[in-house]
Image (cartoon, rainbow, N blue to C red; front, side, top):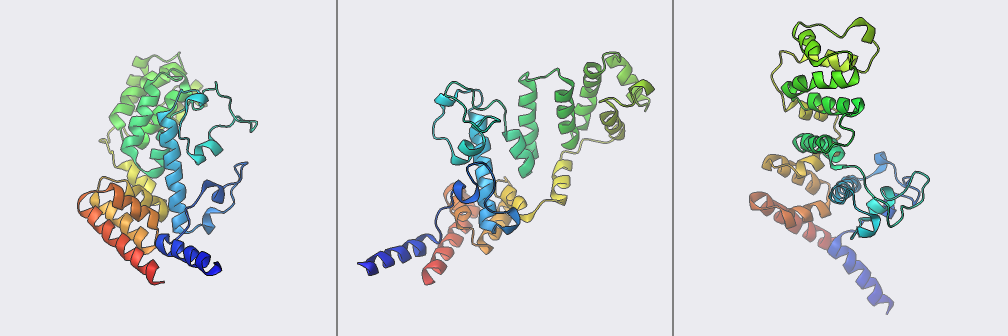
Amino acid sequence: MKLIVMLTFVMYFVDFGYAEMKVSDFWNPNGSSKILWRDMSEEQKAQDYEWKREASEYINANTGKKCSELKNIPDIVKMFSMKLQDGSTKGPNDICFSTQPLRYVYARSGEFDKWVEEERKYYESGVDQYAPYSQLEWLDVLLAAGHYREAEKFFPEFVNIAVPQLSKEEVVQRVKSGEGPPEFLSRSIIVEPWAKILTIKNKPDDYRKAYRDKEKNMEISERMHRNFYSKDDKKRESALEFYNKNKVKFMIEKAHKTWKGETKTKADKYLEELQKSTTAQ
């Protein structure tokens, strides 16, 4: 009997290669981490990125709903997004998610075209649309994403709301002549963005700027996770090569199930090879 149990156990790990990772393997109930990022394997890092993406997409799809209306809630969402500041759980009639987190996950993962569109939807939804700091956040998004002309056009509106003493027309004229804000506003919220607007005055739009800036300091595990979801086949193939090299089986399986064409064929090949190698062990 013991032999049968042991053989079943061995066959399980030969067939699947590893036990499925759970959120509770990474995090304590109070939200503290059980494992440091620097100590994680590439497989664990990939799983962490997948959970963050899953959580953001779930929350984004259920923004504004009562907790009692939610279904199939991911464990990562239960742990981090359904609690009040005092640590207690939100009630059934509470609105569980009041923000749109995809705008953050897209910025973090390097999908800046999606990031800008999610930020645009959030801004245009009217959530604090006329609050100076909300406008500053939107302006910073446009500048970071290289949407210079749109940022330049939006800038006078931001200044006028932040500092009503300055009309939009006066702001336009000052920027046109290369002037900064009046001296009496030298310590206000408009100073730093004003300087940025002056630096992009004669620059053409550069929608690739955000990608280049992000990639300068991007860890390879983050870059490969971003590449995995890219529309560029070469980038997706680079992610597949990376996951194959590091034996991140669940990501190769995901490519096998969701990709099409030549990239799927390569994913199928790697998955088959990985399964053979684990069987041989």
